[in-house]
Length: 211
Image 1: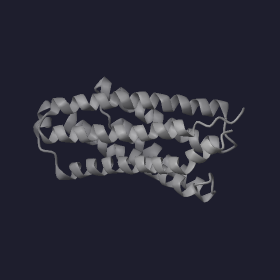
Image 2: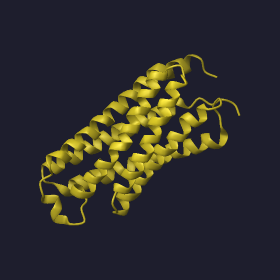
Image 3: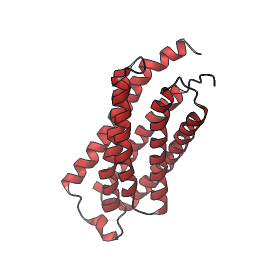
C-alpha cells in the first residue's frame, strides 16, 4: 500500500488529549478544594466525553494502520500499536465514568499499557528509528509515564470525586493525594510539550517533502 502521511493528525490528537486531561483535572481540583463535589463530577463527565471522542479517533486510526500497513516495515508497529493502546485507554475511561463504575480498572490498564509504550520508545531509540530518535523517545516516555500515573489519578477520582459513600466527598483530601494529582497533571503538560516538540521536528519536514 502507498505511504500515507498522517503523522500530523496523530500528534494533533495527542496534544488535544493532554490539553483536555489537564483542563479537566484543574477544574476537578478547583471544585474539590471549594467543596463543590457536584460541579467536580460535571467537569469529570464533560472531560470524559471529549476524551472518549479522541480515544475513538485514535483507536480507529490505529486499527486502520494495523490492517493497511501504510508505513515502511516496523514503523507500523512503532506508531500504531501505541496509538491503539492510548485509544483503548481513553475509551475505557469514558465508558467507566459514564457507567458510574470505578475508574481504577482503567488505571490498571494504564500501568501495563504505559510500560509498553515506554518500552516501544526505548527500543526505537536504541535502534535509531526515525530521524528524530530523541524527540520520539521523550514523547513515548512522557505518554507512557502519564498512562502509568493514571492509576493513582483514577484512585483519586474513585475515592474523593465519585465515591460510593456520598459523605466521602466532604472529607478533606490528604496531602499525598493532592500531590499525586499534581504530578499527574504536570506529566500531562510534559506529554503535550513533548508532542509539540516532536511535531516541530517532523511535521514541517513532512510538509516540505510530501509523498
